Length: 589
Image 1 (spheres, rainbow, N blue to C red):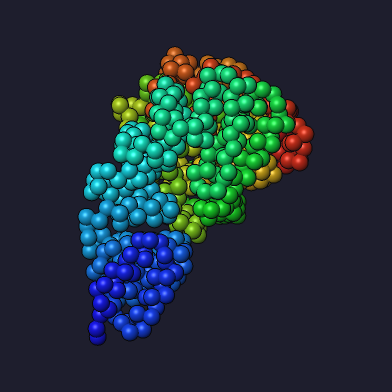
Image 2 (image 1 turned 90 degrees about the vertical axis):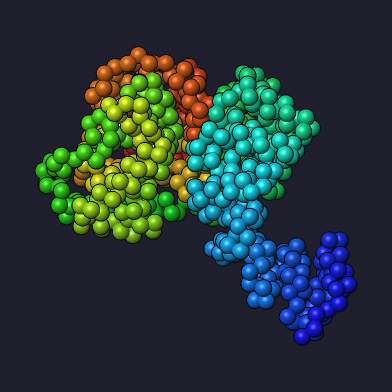
């Protein structure tokens, strides 16, 4: 079988470089009729189809090319890109793995693997692939920026700014790195560095909307709220792609915050509505919705009833169900050999309590880590289908689940002394209370409460990372429904399990911080330490506060947020019937 003349192939490459993809395809189609086994024709066809966003045809062409030369790494990489563009992540991962199998020095294929694993939310692997890409290509600024973003999501914050800076050292005008660095410095309360980064961004980008956005945010941070409002309202960001959607959401959310501070509740609520609309778009684009988390809650409401719990061999009936501790259980590190959990509902003050307790030299806090979900996944499966296994849990399986939890905890918290007490602070671990108690019968829980209407309003007014749990906060109605479902499950737990709980109200915490924290240290059997009251210093020493309260706990304790919902009573009318039973139950009336 003959090949086309080399001059013809050169002319085809020239068409590709010129961007004349349709003319290229017309010629390759006729040539392939005569030369069906020509690698270059199939490869060029695939690349033209890819540029024209005809991904299925691109995939078909690349597969034909690989049938001719199966060890061609660049073709595997191109096929992976086509799969990635169609959302076929498993197939994309396979193609990129084949690319690096045939060429281990192929930095772009390693980078593309990082993108796939980031989209699959397998962030540790994604970070590893991005890091490999930067090692193979020290000027791969896109990989440095992506690595910084993933490390930030993993709460491995020490090198986040450094990797963003490495990206910008190579490409001073790379917008994603500027946006990521500015957002990181703002959320970590590094205001002096933020000011410097904004100045450098203006030099590199000019009066770009990202620069103007963060100039407005800096003005707000400096206490000039009216001026900041004017600056941010004068910006127009059309949300047409990923970064513009995030940028516009940031602008709207900041305006909601400013208007709330200025007591313009009508404007604040409208800005929050628009920001949440963009949050919905972002979540939808990632395939995230509220249904899966609500299903987790519903599964537990169905399973955790007395009839099922009585099947647990470690429990005996009594007033509620009394747990019999495992003799000599030494599986949990730290004082007392039992884990401690701060739980509740988002925006109930858990970040503030976390920061206060960190002021005690013998208390270590893990902030929103995935130790409990990992333990639960090992027990119940990713699809949450094995809750019945709690009744037949063997000693070895129980120990394996506990070890999963403890190993994950140890990666995030390394106490300086053996007598330190470790606290796992993740509000929505409240839904896993049943599994926690089954595996750690002596666990202690600090339940932090806030007026249900204030809690729900604050969730609606805030922006969060995109998760199935947070997808319920885009409307007041969904926020109130989630609150009702979560605490309905919590009430089942308290009715059927013997729990070691200290209930703390946010309102009491901000009204009398010392007395409230003394109750907590007594519950933890820890001596009082005055460092607990130095929360502003403690917050300032933290490298990153990774929750929505990052810009509040660094300020003196304030009471403006108490009864805030009353200023939004008109907007809250539709959800008060859902919340009123809980207002009474938690004795807020």
